[in-house]
Each structure stands twice: as structure tokens, then as C-alpha cells.
Length: 161
Image (tube, rainbow, N blue to C red; front, side):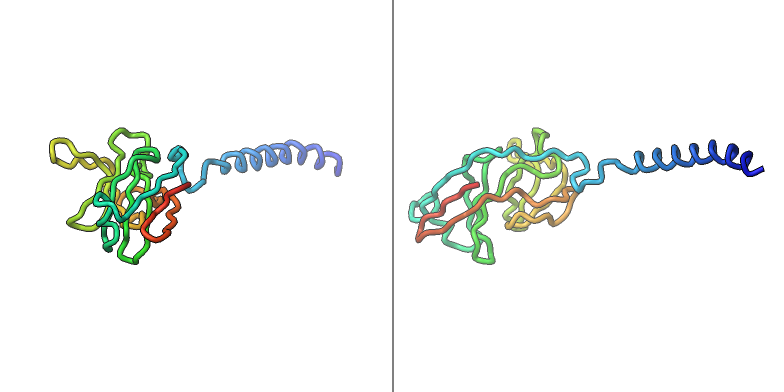
């Protein structure tokens, strides 16, 4: 009698093991915080800005900013209201591969937004809004804008990654 119980239990045990393996395998999906979003490519950045020059003199004031060449799609250099300098990538972190995923400045609301300008008309790309220090304020993006290091030495600002 004990032998028949063992024979009956063996197929049940195999089915249980197979179900457990299937359950574990199905729960191993992509649960990373990026949820499949692509990353912004790393490109070498080494820029020096002289705030004594007329083109960058406004950076000495809180809220001043400059658009710089460099990075993936350009860089915003911002003198934020916390008296810190931030160099922010101009590529939106929600859909960085979209052609429209450029970060633009909205001076009326003192924030950055995702989209492009065409003939002085702003076209939103994903409706993400960012603060001057690059953090997400609203929209579908879950990640802050990519930052580059800013080093201040007198009136010189050096931006590097």
C-alpha cells in the first residue's frame, strides 16, 4: 500500500515542481526602474565658460542661464536660485530617442520642458517639466535630467563628465 502511494505521489510532485519553476520564470520580468527606457549616450564633455565675457556675464545673476554646444543634444548651464551652477543635458529622459525630445527653457514659469520650437511656436513632446536643477516636476518622465559636473574657479566655470 505504501508503494502505491509513492507511485501516485511522484507524478504530482513533478507537476508541482514544474509549476513552481514556471511561476518563478514568469516573475523574472524586467522590473528595473527604467522599464525599457533607453539611456542618454555618454559623450566627452570639457567646456570652460568665462563669466566675465559679455556672452556669459548674466550667469553671475541667480536665474541666469546659457545654452552651450556639447553633450548629446546640447547643455543648459544654469545659475539656479539656490546659488549653485548646474550643467544639464538638453535631452529629455522620457523618450530620448525621439527627434522632438529636446529640453527648452520656459522663462515665464522658470522651468524646463520637453519639446521643440517651430516658427516661434512650442510643440510639446511628452509633457515632462523639469526644475532648473534638473529634477522632474511633472509629466511621464521618472528621471531627472542628466547632469554634468561644474567646477567654479573665480569667474571661470568648467563643465566635465
